[in-house]
Image 1 (cartoon, rainbow, N blue to C red):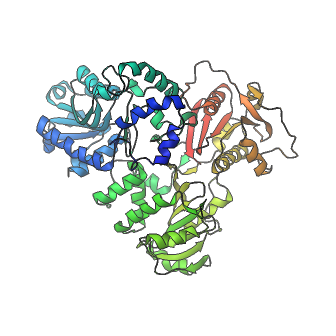
Image 2: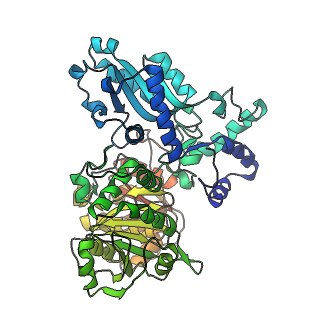
Image 3: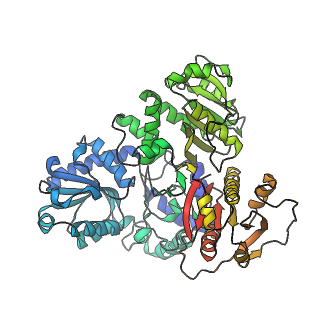
Length: 614
């Protein structure tokens, strides 16, 4: 379970190690043999062990037991609960969310089993148990046996919960104190090395997570799952703050800021963020594992399962599509990165596409399963101009130019080159996979952006809602804010970082100092009408671009030094993000940051209100 080439590419591991000073690498290398990565196969194996332990050690009976996932919707506890139920062939009736438990309806219950993937510090489980039990009747408190069933648990957290609550702990794989690097009983470092190791670990972890440099609860964790990395693990392994490149990114928070994201209709209609699939979908364990290995989180798996189901895609084709997604992210031709594209359609649209004027070439005897021939066709395709059309059986129909006719109002942040993706996927109600030449994967379904992949992680997408309300709230012209957001997305597409500060310009200017005394006087300096290439070049320079509420570019390459009286928590997000966060609190400006990894973040009143992948 330690880090190996099948889990992390040697080139990625080398790149990660090279972020450490040469003299510090010996300490970091000593951690690697003890790092535990739990693959999907190992997790499913442990879930079987966990259920046998519950039956043998705690004598639970399925007929008198409630199984309860821990955490908010789509948290890893919900995912683990779903795997647990499927692995052990348990009935769905006895699985219930914490909020749905009615205290006056528990007379038949003998055991309540809280299910999660991981116990780290034990703080969360301790608080959850206390809050939950306090609401129960005295009779139920004394009669019911409460059990925490976890796949993996640190001895530190297990002892904490066991000593402070009456909950029983059942863990399939325990991690002892000896595998916590700086613990007195650690076997990773000897006594002479521990002080040096502590200094090295703090040196690199402190900038990434100032308040919890050794992981949440000071657990000093060395653990990842195939679908997530706990925040108890040392930040050097999972944090992307301060331009750090992690081995195992944590990915999006499941708490999506839906106030600014308009999810596609089918995501709003269906409870795809729950622990359950559409009841009509019943994929095999092998298909489920393939989906999980690709998308790494149950909420995203549910979304793609729903899309595949709607397109009537044969289940045997799904693993082949997932292989294509995995293989094409970094596709090259003659050693140069290329952009290519695949459109998967429902069979009822086959004749429509064949007769469409945009359909420019027929292909026969090529299928997705024929890896070599299929790849050769993808390599010579220009994914910005046209796409390879695939039937739900896996047969390739031919090449289709993107439709430029507007089917619906375009997303308010997208440039014209993305409208073809939206229009074509909606016109043919298809699943469009675009593999860009800057190593991103874009997924559209029926006209909507669904997900983006950059690096190893998938990010939920969606169209931004009308920004007029937030603009008016800050006395900013709506067109100005929309254009600033579009600039942020274009900057992200170029792989550059940026900081745009929009509105309340007089106050913002009092906290700004020039990094360079190089300021041009442009004939047109309004972002709504000025040359976009010039604006993108300015945005990508060091420092911030200060934009007035009516759209004038007042300053660029300026350092922002707003005052922080302690009201805004600094979370280790890097200089650019922290300056934006504090500035949005100290003034009435809206601050937009773009990271070189592609994330776009909007700050309002000191709060992060949006974070999406560009």
